[in-house]
Length: 229
Image (cartoon, rainbow, N blue to C red; front, side):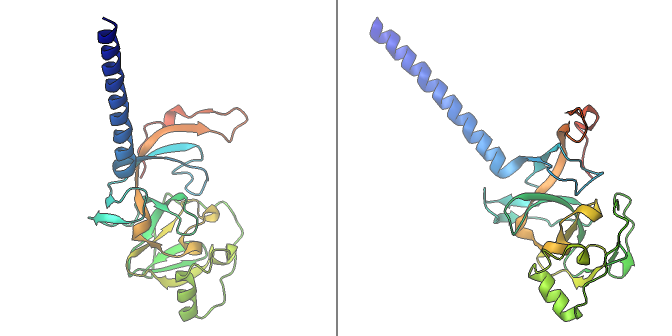
């Protein structure tokens, strides 16, 4: 009788372990291929996305990646202009969220804080400028400017590429990204073009939001469930 009871307990334990193992494998599969949670730590995308927003990211937006790498098994589309993307910082490894404003072959220029794409000023109702100061441009010949920008040499250039930038041509296989909070965003103006292999996906919606900036932190209930565009 005791042997039978021991056998039943062992079978039940095996079943529980198998169930936990399946759950862990499912979570790893979803995390690696399908969805990913992302916490917004900075205000570079305000007022579209706020500090303390938690986003659910669709990792299948552009293709199927090898989990935990920057390699795609299959990339079936590339980011569209105006689309918000999550990507891995080529120089640090952390994930960033920005807006795609330039595609391969586009000429990007910023004059007096206004974005020009292929010589045309862009209408960007989602953009905010919060610093009245305007910095002058870097005095560099165009050919050298393009090469140094592509190499990421402007990472510490500060305001000298923030308000007046370019012109540069977005190389093949890359995109140009910027934050909506233009005066407080570290983006392609500084780090250079973003290779497509570093694109993680697109944010689906805000699944949680903490207001950490006020004297009394609390939940932003009105933001939960809001889609990101």
